[in-house]
Length: 226
Image (cartoon, rainbow, N blue to C red; front, side, top):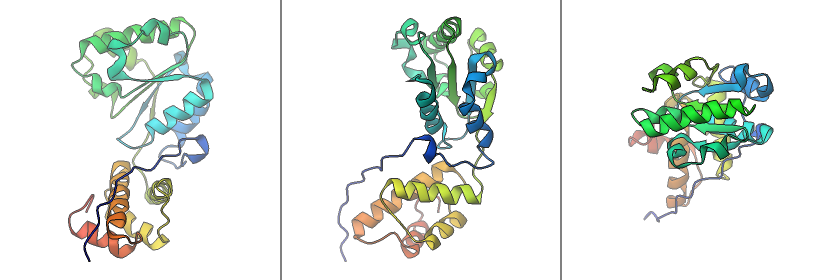
C-alpha cells in the first residue's frame, strides 16, 4: 500500500505542575523549584541533559513566581534593566560559550536582579564548569550558585514519559508498546521525544495505529534510537 504524506505537527506539551512526572531522578529539583522562596542567595541553577524537563520546570517556576523567561542567547539585545525589575529565568546558559556580549549581559542581569531583591533561575546542560564561560566575574557567580541536577530517567520514569509524550499528541498506544520502547530506545529524554515523533509521523503516513509492530519496523530500519 502506498504511504501518504502526513503533516508532522508536534503535539502541544502540557507544562503545568500536575503534568511534571516526579521520580527519584528529578525529585530534588522539583522540590527546590517548589521551595523557590528559600533559595540560597535567591538564585538556582537547574542542570540536566537535553529534554530532561528543564523547560517544563522553568515554566512551573514562572507560574509559581510570576517570572519572565528569556533565552540566554537573546540577552545581548534585551533590555536588561527592565528584565531585572522582576523574577527572571534564563534558559540554556551553556550556549553562551565564546559569546562575550551575552555573557556580559547575563553578568549584569545577575547582579541587577539580586540587587532588586528578585530571584533568578538559570538552566543549562551539563556541569556549569564545562559551559565555557570565559568571563571571570560571571563564571564566579555561576560557581557560587546552588545546582539542582536532573538525572537521566529510570525505567519507570521513561515509561511514564513515553506515555505523556504520546498523550500530548493525542495517541494512546497499548502498554505493550511502551514496554517495548523502554527496552529498545536510548535511555534519554531526547530519545523518547524522537521516537514518539517518528511513530506519530509513521502512523499518519500509513494511516494506522501506533503498534509494537510499527515500532519494531521503525527501529529495525535504523529509526530514532534503533
